[in-house]
Length: 196
Image 1: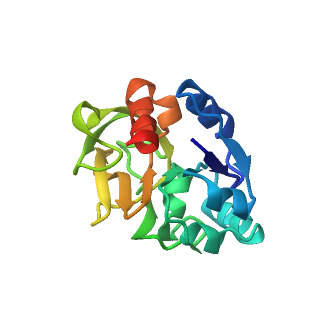
Image 2: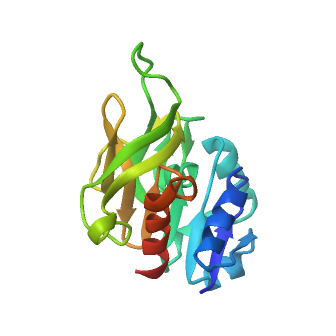
């Protein structure tokens, strides 16, 4: 299987590649439009901020390329947020593939921001990412911004309020958690995305 990792400047590329290797996949990091279009699966990883990541995609000429893909695409953490219409982080437009706006967690005395650590993910609907006994589990999160529950929500998480742990529309999917750092549940998410 040919898997393309889109180079959006994220810091979690190494751990995502290692997780894919454990599933028997050698994925190349690329900003090459032809390589991304030719891939069987595309993963948009990301750790960082929305505005610089979108600027890098624009500078690389990849915004329209990503929007036009018909194969399964998975956004991870910031990559998921970039799939959305807009982000409050940097007040920037995203790829517009998911009709949702990314919002910062409100500051509260009983909840630290960023949301960092293990939390339970509960699938709200059957999808490519969550099937059979891989529908619910514990996943690792590191984020200050989140997608509210919306029509694209595939799974939720509760952190002083419910937010989208996973979203999807057509061939585009996103997970807010880091599947590459989420033990068996995260590996199941990646396996389902790649092989289901």
